[in-house]
Image 1 (cartoon, rainbow, N blue to C red):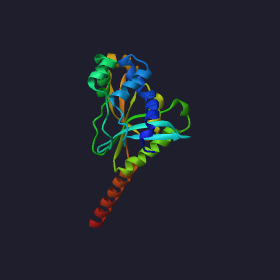
Image 2: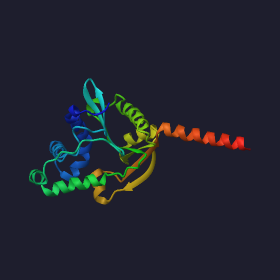
Image 3: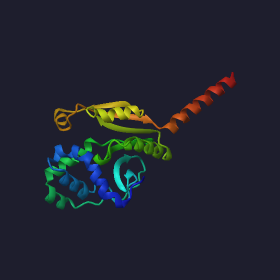
Image 4: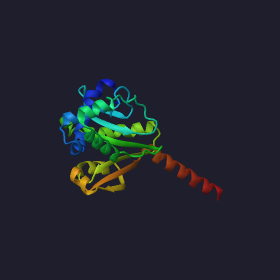
Length: 219
């Protein structure tokens, strides 16, 4: 379902199960400190955020997806002032977090829905929530008339990679890590994957068939 402002605290808690793994090598701090950095820098817009999808079980956030696409509606990010952030966390640590964010940036095409992050809470894994989330994402992309869904995965995350392949995603780009990044992420490469949205595939097939039919009629 779509995100609501009341979900923010649970969304942050579940999201940090993924993001903390990415942040910790840069901040060298625990999940509580890293959660506070995300909260205080306004990295997740709180009031309105069309780019967050929620999987809910018994009234609790069981899974979270962070999406990027052109025209995404979200409220203005609310952050502590730069001075307060520097006093609280230190300039070097904030610069490291900023550099980490730039590393995971992805340029979005007009026809693209990019999955910036997907995580299922430890408490709810093994219930098929991941597969259900992808069905929702597919419908979401179709509703927005987007042609492709993209995502990224570490080459060492074999379980996630296998799931994405099973769901029809194909590799289209591989980014190699430098030595420092290899040590941080315990991986050699960052794999980008893509899948055409079903409505668009059907649209292409339909138009190809019409073109073939027209060619036959012309003859």
